[in-house]
Image (cartoon, rainbow, N blue to C red):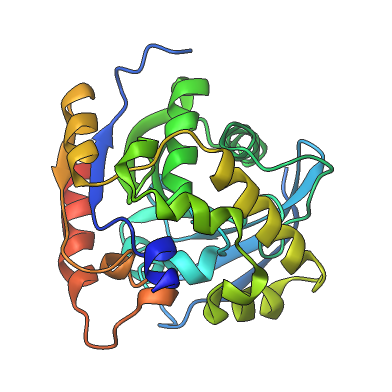
Length: 274
């Protein structure tokens, strides 16, 4: 039950255009093939605001930046849908601060810092403008990118993103204050240990993620998604039945029989191509 509270609070996909928001070089690149053997990916590290940020690039076309959720990596959030998206877009994905293969800094995590890190990575990669798809915490980071770096944003997809704190059951916050590594989904722990050069960093990532959520002011549920949709010009809203992240095959909620990604990805592409 605890896991359901923490990881399945949100069951929605918010598609938003931030065109009207008013607020104001890569190292050691190598090539590899993705699982379907039809797409080429480049991966490497870039010096970003004092950390070494790991990134991957797939496909060709208009840039689409993928931002993973809390406690996650590129693969755990987007592994299933990258091959679909890379057929039509130049997909850029990264591990955020202290996650996966990216190093940490002597500072807490924040959505604002993640936004600045993503913007710096894109500058290093000579990408001046892109669409963004942020899932869960990555969606909150995408909102901060739109606020802090609107010049690099075309369209944004917010998948299960955070909005208002009072939109979640109160017990969520009590659980987060007492969160331990033992309660973290095994799939996320295994994925981190599989790719990280620093196994001890798993505890650090967990603690920083938990601290950020405890201190976060807002979170979302369908009613708040509708409110957010109404306040964003040129936005579209889709609420997808299922558990948190199932619609993109996120690893902790992947149902082998789920076909949601097969219709959600075309929906996303339709929005991006408008």
